[in-house]
Image (tube, rainbow, N blue to C red):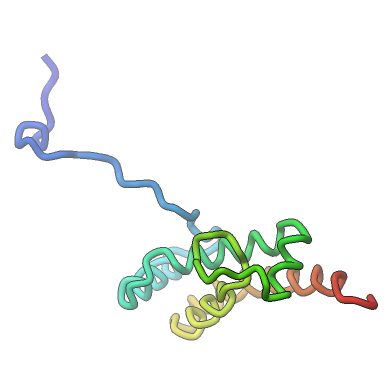
Length: 130
């Protein structure tokens, strides 16, 4: 007969952790991720930084229509989870970059600036007269 786990004997529920809503930011060191988690815990942000990074990345790599709506200011409903990209995602990342320790902020800033260049490069093509 197979041996039972101690938690099964005590009647405790041993479940898996719930799946994260947004993927973890790739390319960050463990120290940077730990600093980010600490900052989010202190300020009760939850996964807001990962959500903001994910939305900013989606804007950088998404369709030109999303990029056009993001900068005209008419498609913003003010709900972070709805998918309209013009509501403060980049501003949240900027707040996080200033709140993190220098080394961690440097790592995250490199990833964010790469996305910034892509967004600006694509937005230049949408400008009238270009």
